[in-house]
Length: 203
Length: 203
Image (cartoon, rainbow over all chains, first blue to last red; front, top):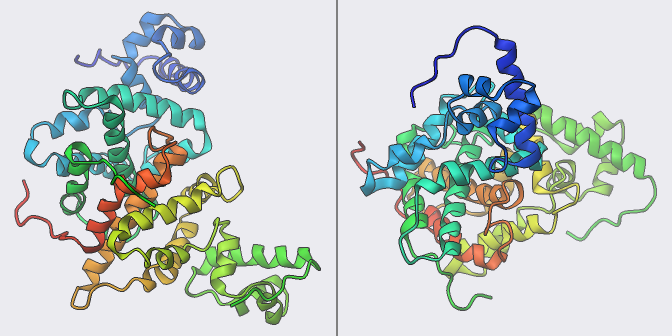
């Protein structure tokens, strides 16, 4: 899975492919879009798409202007099993910290999602396939509970990014990532492994 | 604090005041904007602003197109001290659920914040004065810790709204608000009252 060697050659063709991919993902979602369909839309040979992009995930990351492949976050967190929540928070915020001020910042991605439900749908599918598939639930747990855990983890991570980069509320706006990981990590741990069943009665 | 009686009269004047307020809040923030300054900017008498709006908070809620005054959430939650986190989640999501599809939806407010750091700043000041001032920290706790608690609560609430209305990830997108309150309430409780000190050493 080493990069296929990006020739400086025809940057216009590459940009055309990225544009076509963005349109295709928004139109048909992440899962249903093939590299072949992107090639057709861009008017190029499928081999050329493969030449520029190793995978559909890599093309999506660029089309959506994500700062990096979020599929790397659980990979990184796997090595810190005793404090996985903190590691997930760290990986997530490090990713977005590195993108502050660039065209791939959290604010620009958030704007794109607000502006287009289709973009939000495509990103959700991408995360499901690229991130969550790496993190299977415990055996015997229902699919509903597994999804509940995932959506709650997503809510806390997105909320931290929102507070840090958009709402810019202190101390989250300028605290060290490791400190935030210490504060919010136990939340992620509970969402991943804790008891989430609501109390039997609730008015 | 009963409404001052809104005459159907001159809706243009009222709209002018709201427009002027929006510009003033964005320019000078929430705290530093006076109703008198809004009146000057709108070219009307200050008494007229008071005629249409009971308070600066009411004018801000309308200028920012918030679905309701968020200052009412802690008031409501105060009556449920044993599960305050769940009550806060419920109050927050009920507020935004009631606005889905309207011009004051979470998506429109989120878009405004992404598009303008000044709007985000004004909203942050408003929340600090209107919501957090109602919820003083325990005596003896540092101001830094108190702010840390507030910003973490904000991060989880905003993240839940984001997951429900923008990212639309299931089950958060369509679960009952009371169910979500059961899942995420303990997170809010921990942020409000729990031990947030990061571990002494970290990786």
